[in-house]
Image 1: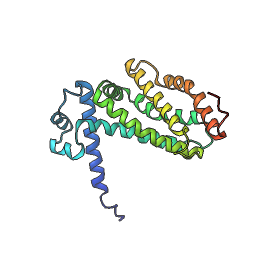
Image 2: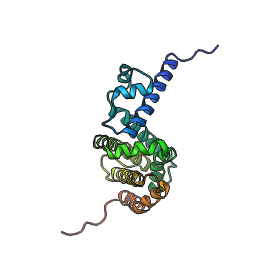
Image 3: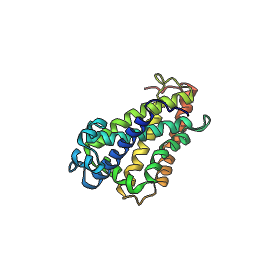
Image 4: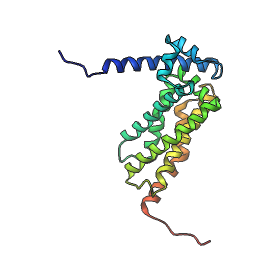
Length: 215
């Protein structure tokens, strides 16, 4: 009989409880509004005690932050998996689409959560805070892909920032339309706007400085 690694069952149980709490919290918060829902109500909806809730999350905000963390990890993994020779705009479009598609594919659950995040100042602040972290992670990946010095070159952070601006723009338009606008079309339109800059800037960075204009 093959023995399982120590802690496997406990880890699975912990993940299951965390997922149940996350789903219960996001559902309640989206339906009732962030300020109207208490931790007690979230715990009751998930079938656990308030004490159990605080073993997994420090606050209501942290439940949403966990949702955002998973989106960021998905984008980082998506960029790392793109073909090395792919143009930056193409690689970043697929990267952004990975997370947008995850939301759009479960619109009945994800759309209210996106609307909750974008419409609640405290959560929007956490969202923007997370995006700053994602930008650094995507910039590091872009620098590695292109053989650029992350500390010396401007391109990696500019490229990551443009991609995340497109990401937030698509989510905002999708949210504002109550899900009626096609997120795939919105993503394509967004990257059609920024692709020339994404693909031109890398050529400028790698070709060295051009002539400087006189003041």
